[in-house]
Length: 265
Image (cartoon, one colour):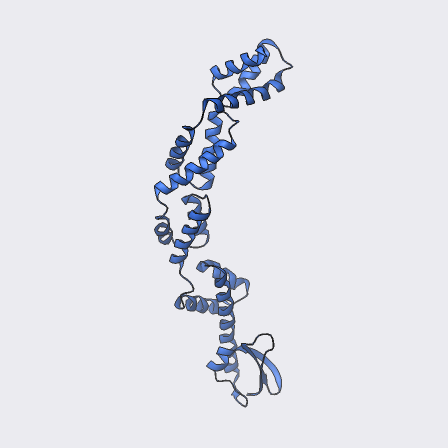
């Protein structure tokens, strides 16, 4: 049997108290644990009582850390579990902390999914497939994901994808229409858009392409190839030019036009 001989408030952590047993420092507890167990000077404690106090204090410490973690931004349950594991909170204590966080409305994976989707729509250029992958990685249930992504309508997806297609079409303006289309499609796919949306966005973007841009891309690539193969002459030069430009996605008639122009200069 041990006796509490002194209780003192910690200097740096004003919600924690040092407990002295038989004139020696034994452990510290959160203020809520102190009140819960009615700890006071002269109180006798058995070994099992001390173990219970320490267990509840671990839960309280873990809960305080989790609440602070959640105060920075919303988190999914999986993120909080991983945080508690890094803080070396035991499994049983972590389970109780998670249960308490739900009861106190600090955790709600359904609300988290809805807020996450809304944020990604408003602040990023990600498509629904990318957002879905990220939510799955965060441990969100499929039903919550589907419910949240319902806000990302097909019309909104096309609107965002079209802006991206325009942006990347300008980036690849020196490529042939074929290569340009492929690169834009690949980019939109990486961003997480589905094929029907990609097709509609690319078609809408391509409709804005001018004949001047097409010819500029043709001559840009032709001049690059010409610098590489100008040491050749006659049929060999033409063959190498045709092969190089054909791989770049230009039509035979465009290639012939570019070669004639270069040879006429």
